[in-house]
Amino acid sequence: MSAPEPEPRIARFESLAYGMFVHWGVFSLNERCVWAMHPKRYPIEDYIEQTKRFTAEAFDPREWAATARRSGMRYMTLTTRQHDGFSMYDTRGLSEYDAVHAGPGRDLIAEFVEGCRSQGIEPFFYHTTYDWYQPSFAEDFDAYLDYLHQSIEILCTHYGKVGGFWFDGNWSKPEADWKEDRLYGIIRRLQPQAVIVNNTGVDARGALGHPGIDCVTFEQGHPTAMDRSGMDKYVAVEMCESMNSFWGHTPSDYNYLSPKGIIEELCACRGVGANYLLNIGPKPDGSLPAYESSAFERAGGWVECHAPLIYEGRPAAVQCPGRDVALEWDGKVYLFVYDIRPRPDEHVATGVTGHGPRRYRGIDGSVAQVRWMHNGEALEFEQDDDGELTLQVTPYPWGVNMVVRVAELTLK
Image (cartoon, rainbow, N blue to C red; front, side, top):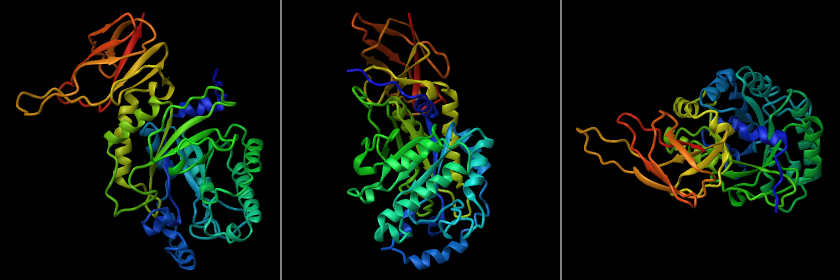
């Protein structure tokens, strides 16, 4: 059964490949992630009162976007409204609980969009559908949906072209009629090229959902390759993950990804054709925390070394050993080889692991040459009549560790 081809806007989204997720808002003041304001944890009156301290005095969206660009990221998704109900944009009379009428006294989303565009970064809008602030969410759901849909119409009409909308919260009322036809219809009418995502949560990773969705989500969990055979439309895949244990600024959390972890996660995503959306939690004042920024940019050196393959490469039908994955691009096949260690210096007592023969099945064509992409070193190989490739993986030279080493296969 044939699979559909991606619409141009979906193909373009897949080529963005790697994005920065940003969870920032009033909740950042509590330093306990986005769920700090949950009514069972925090009296709503007290939470609203602290909005006065949310001044965003160090918010520099151009620097945010520059950090993303240096990290190899091509798009940025910011929380325009989180579950606490505070809007980071001018709601134009829908509510007084927004960044123009409370807190910083200015439209933070307008600043964000300008900052992204100054650095060539595509702006995407996260927007909650689950709202702890609006009484109508619990008392009059149809009225709440009117408010929600009017909010999205504002975002569609006052900030220029938007890369996409990333919704989150339908899982809070799984049996409700969310009137998704109307919501997505607003976007299609006003932002026809926008990608629509609606997070299915950690309990339904990869679920398709409403036919208007353009991309399925894998929250905090490795994506799997999507079989699109017989589907009515081509749907993209995206994994969203936080740098630490929580979504947002949590300085008491020390469980962070390293640059090594970022590279490994990015390669795992691209190996199954998924985008990778990696979260950072700015400080309450809007400044980016040093470690996360540095880790992003350090991993960005690896991305730069392997561009444009990371953006334009697509999964190859190659059976790989272990964690290895394969992409194809521009008539060549690329093997992403994990778990190699450097050749030790004679004065360093560490063994070499991960080198030697590795076998890859399903290579479509005869291999003429194999070389490491980062330094051009030629590799020995054998290929049998069934196409199985036995590659002699070499260890890194001393002083080099690419974490994931990419072998370029030139076909006859």
